[in-house]
Image (cartoon, rainbow, N blue to C red; front, side, top):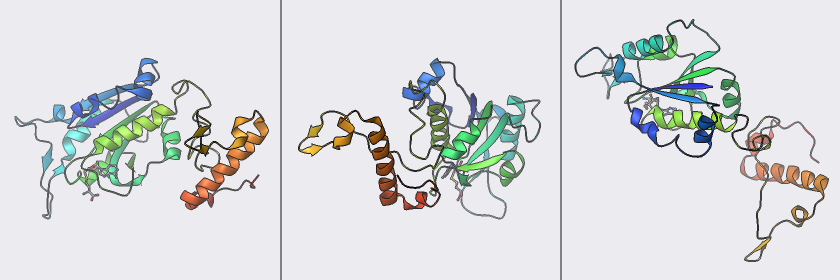
Length: 237
Ligand code: SAH
């Protein structure tokens, strides 16, 4: 899968993708990340990307022209609604980016992420350039860059072969199936400062372990995220 990121801070991305899962996915050839500097599509000497909002108000907005021209030059033959090449605007006003959205977006061959800045961007970017607006949560970031890094990290983590074990991502929190939380996990020592690992996990009875994990996942979800349980239809074990 290929990610394009359109940003006024290309250097922001020199850190987040150089470690762990995203770096591994890149090395394995499972993903390509192309960072584009929005200022490359400006026409004036000062490489201006922003302007004042019509009607007055605080702050500046990203102008539409550099954003439209950037997308049109990255994909010159793209047709509107092209499902293989999606444009997503990172925006506090977007629909929530969650695990289900990550699964849906990973079906595209290419995904272009537009990072807003300042007070946001001209609304025509949302209505006539982006296929969708994505928000990573109900809070206001100072720019879309952190959000774009989150989106790429989550999608990369799901790619086959990236975690090493094909099953690692299957049982995780929010994943396909009923999207509840992952079960509690323990590693050695079995007794840490008197805190004992549940006995069932120390024996080799896989059926008992499976049932314990399912119950523990449901219990933890009920305690920390009861909102997720309303969607669970499967009977409790
Ligand atoms: N005035 C806007 C906020 C602009 S914040 C509003 O009130 O909705 C500047 C930029 O940060 C946005 O254009 C967007 O790209 C990014 N951003 C802010 N919060 C975000 C969030 N929760 N998810 C994704 N991107 C966000």
